[in-house]
Image (cartoon, rainbow, N blue to C red; front, side, top):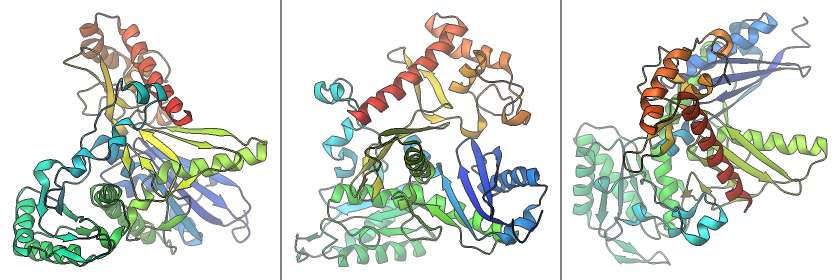
Length: 454
């Protein structure tokens, strides 16, 4: 092979909760794909293993290929999965006194998001999700700025000092400050941010502080609050992950700045300040690719879906285009972000399966087994069965060829645990219980599709 004419120019990374895929594209347009088991504790190692797997098909090494590449684009679901599973950082929230419950209550529309038309009309099943910031880590501070940015009530700094101390004492790993109309005058927010940093230093803490005016200075307080909280709750942990991936690639000779798929359909630097803009970096590339395929195949109206181990994502392409809105909802949260019109729910092929102690019915997710697959994998360390266990029992997955045989699945172990945790409590056979779980998942996904279309 002529390295000069067929050098590898692009790497695309798709880091899911279960598997990590890498795509290497040569100058002549040829490509290879690699796959490895995801590692949320060290995502860089999963990217490296997947790269080695891909480049082996060209009989090339990472150390030789990385220096050739012109660019690399990362997409992943870790940030979104943190939101749908409620597994983000412990965030402290400082708001106007009297507004402490606003984030927990949310906009009334949030409890209807993701439901089909008949449920929205008849209120059959709407619910409120757990807030990203619980009431015990929310504090109010006296101040008020009016809609024109004029100070109506001065900031009571002693309350800000007290709030910062209490939030840090309660284990907050970051603090978000959101005041009414701060997009018109952010002086109070910025002063409280200074106070929080001062208090954190005194208490020997080095937690990040987020003032909404410095990240998303826009109107609509509920949207701005959700988005800034999301920056601290889900984006900040991803920043550390992306830094490690970038450093690891550079240590192997890469000279490009790693880009991340953004929610509006473009890319931004991994080191961008507003990293929450990459919330749906994983599925967003699929929407763009679907539009491209639709254009080539002559289809103008397309329903795009992406099911992973943790979440199910869907978008609609109508008349050859997807919509981009500034105030879209995502994962049942209203946000101040330019987002391609799509949505996600916490239902995936690796979702945990539990019996509801009150109703006796089957509950799926929103948390999932992720890279640990299910109890059918003896090294998983899990004690709860997943949808994958049900697929293995019914023969939908080859237990000897999972990840090309790198992960061996134990069918009997899956049967024993599904019998104990699901089948026996419901008085069903193992096969009927497994089939019921999969049908319940399918029904949930159908409901989501209908909600998007209606």
